[in-house]
Image (cartoon, rainbow, N blue to C red; front, side):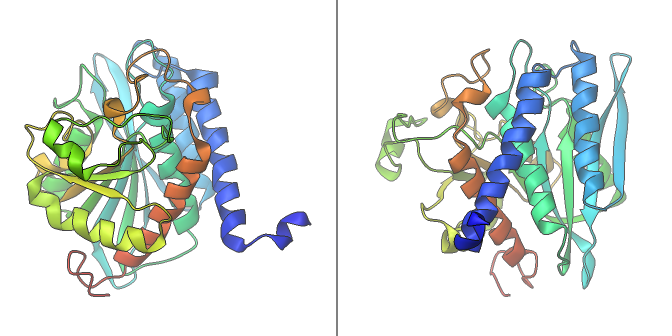
Amino acid sequence: MISDYFPAEYRLRKSIERNARDILRFLAVDLGERTLRRYGNLQAAAEFIRGRFAAGGAPVRNEEYEVEGRGVANIRAELPGIEYPEKIIVVGAHYDTIEDTPGADDNASGIAGLLELYRLLSPFRFKRTIRFVAFTLEEPPYFSGDNMGSMVCARRAREREDNIELMICLEMLGFAGRRYEQNVPFRDMARNFPRRGDFLAVVALPSSAPYAYAWKQVYNRFARKNIVDIVGPSSIPGINHSDHFSFNRHGYPAIMLTDTAFYRNMNYHTGEDTIDTINFKFLSEHILNSFNTIRVIADCEDITSLQC
């Protein structure tokens, strides 16, 4: 076959790209809006994710609860750690959308990252447990409230006294290109940012800064284009606008990987957030980089000092 003449990394990236296209086509084209208002679509998305998790061989768990008389669920799969199974890295992304949007970048791209990372990592075992979670109801009006899917997940984890050493939030991973202008929250931040929107960012509140810097250090070993860190207080607009916020609130370290959302993607929370706006080469490359990064940190004795 012709693919045998290409490097293994190239073939792997192309397989990620094909799978990511299939995932986004189902979520953002076949289904579209995934909300309580479109409850059938929300449930179909959940069932699709369960099927992808089950295909990897791990038991699939539903973290169920009720909102406005409807049953909803976070969906979990785990790779148990072989030395420190009680130490957990959570990788998560939300599968719902805001109303009247197909949610290709927000957040079918994050779900593609989640499912592909699970597929890539599931043949391996690591010192720590890796827990993959697809969250429901991240978007308003549930964001930051008790019914936000990741808030339920983090609260229940704290009640169980789960030892989550790091939560990695995948939030909008696929809108990028040199033709896009990169905006920033404050003018003085522009000095430290590329002017073109062709990079991925790792984002954290100050309490999780060491984890963002550790992620960046490992990630950039594998990246052709370096990841950019954004660490700052909650007063920076958007810095806590995703599922990592829930884990921070419950005392767990958490970082977010993102294409910077509305600072770059003008289709954010509109009906124009469609599959044809996704840069699948960018998405697949950063999924592969994240796969390699997790393989390193999941086996480190200490994540922040990278004693591996």
